[in-house]
Amino acid sequence: QRDMNGHIQAHIRATVRSALNLFGRFPLRRIVLGGTAETIPLMKRELPARFQGAVIGTFLADAHMRDAAIVSKALAIAHEAEIQKERERVQELSDALSRRLSPSAAASEPTAESWSRPREHAVHGVQETLQALSEQRAQRLLLRRGFHLPGSVCENCGSLFTVTHGPCAYCGRPLRSVPDVLEHAVERAEAEQAAVEFITESPTLEALGGIG
Image 1 (cartoon, rainbow, N blue to C red):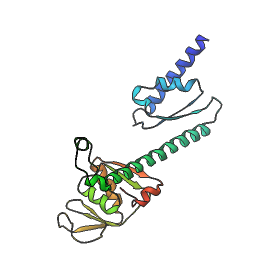
Image 2 (cartoon, rainbow, N blue to C red):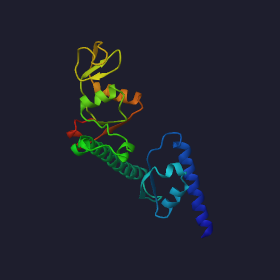
Image 3 (cartoon, helix red, strand yellow):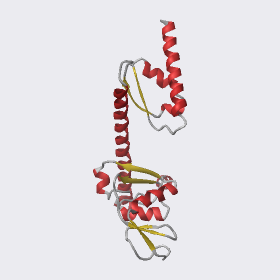
């Protein structure tokens, strides 16, 4: 029995090492583990500490399970984790907007505690979001997947607008019309090192203008 356990442990160690050699050079944000009730904890234990927090789920599998079934189970878990993450991001935006727009928060005197917290700069809707990006105030961009909108870009300062012509509101130079200003918004956010996340389906984000 001890020899068998040692063999299983060595096999798991080799499997994890091979997987990390193959995929470790890429940023691993999510890991799904499949195996038996006995081997799953062993696999997780063999993962380096920096990857253990990336495990988003597990499923039972055996040596007789077809590759297609394994992939299907792993993708289902990954998809559900992605949807849950999107819900959390949208809820964070909604909560931040509620705090920013709260009359009690606006009327209250600042305290030592309130000054120590990061100030809320959450925005929503196309106009506010493009303004935040143009003024380099964006930290994270949430955008409904498939959302497109014509607009314009200032050739001089790079500011973004929903209008398709006229002078730039920041520098006065002419604007260049573009078929999708939100594509430029994503590029601007990435250039500013802001996180960009596409939201597949969210009635809450839809109500906020599809972007924030």
